[in-house]
Image (tube, rainbow, N blue to C red; front, side, top):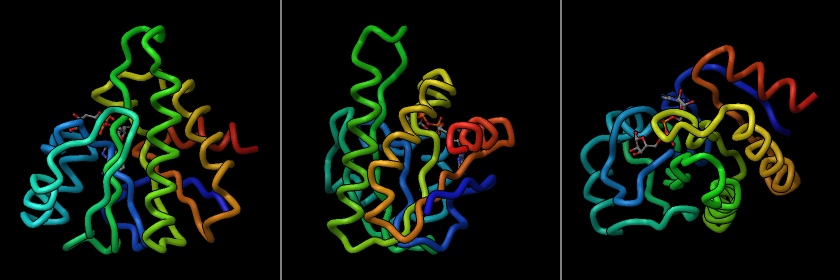
Length: 162
Ligand code: APR
């Protein structure tokens, strides 16, 4: 089942939360900053040990102090006008994130709108890719939550899911 929720992804008690990370896995602002604050300092150490992650892929760590068991760090593309493989890379990072979560036994997963904040991906196009990716993995999870930070984003997802 796919549902749309508005609020802070760090509060969700799901098996896996997806982070919108950067390729250095260094932490940052936005959802990345919130996840690092919520998970505590051990997350930074775990990310440092992994070293990094190419754009379009994902890496997994424990959730540490978050309610979620796992954090899947997915690296979306920076929007550069649309002719730099942004769509392929965004698809790819969702696919990697779902696959990694499944490999670690997750049956529930929450995802933010990757690349639509600091990375400036247009919200509607990004949501189309996110929803297509969620539909592709719907049968593999008990619960997929599209976690939106604001009501406008949530309405974009709901319209696409109707
Ligand atoms: N819960 C859910 N969604 C959130 C939260 C939160 N706590 N905080 C922010 N968001 C939303 C934003 O509103 C946006 O819709 O997450 C979406 C993704 O925005 P960003 O976090 O800016 O991610 P992104 O655009 O992928 O940029 C990644 O930003 O923080 C840095 O280290 C990160 O360099 C990386 C870049």
